[in-house]
Amino acid sequence: MGLWLPGKSLGQQRQASRPSAGIPPLAPSSQAQDACAASCSIPTSPAKPAEARAAAWRCLREGLSNKDADHRIQAVYALGTLGVQSVPRIESELEDKDSLVRQAAAKTLGDMQASQSIPSLQAALDDQSAPVSFAAAQALWRMGDKSGTSILVQVLAGDRGRFTPA
Image (cartoon, rainbow, N blue to C red; front, side, top):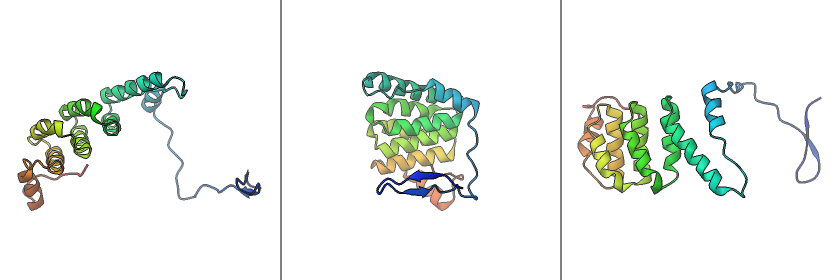
């Protein structure tokens, strides 16, 4: 006998669908992820929005300072959804030790159309990592700044190192 759930619209019952056999179960989360989630618990009470906002910003700051590059990348992308107030924090990640974080920062600034970041993105054109300089060139191009055009042309012509689109 299967699991039965009440139907929402007609008060009928229907059998719950079984998980697909081809889909593996979720892997247990790592201790690092658990620690991050625990330290970033955000209150859900609508009566305390200021407390929730402060906790969310604390979680993002912790994400940016995490030793795991994937956490820093996710924090950069999350900050990109918050608007102009997060631009300086994202810009600072153009100096990260990990090229994937720098690439994510350049892409995010371009996606945000953060024109105040043009000087920082122009400096990122000289990054030792080809994907970072390519992401910076793309970001600048989207904002109407053509200073990275030569990098885009070199990549298209195959004269510049391999890149991984962000």
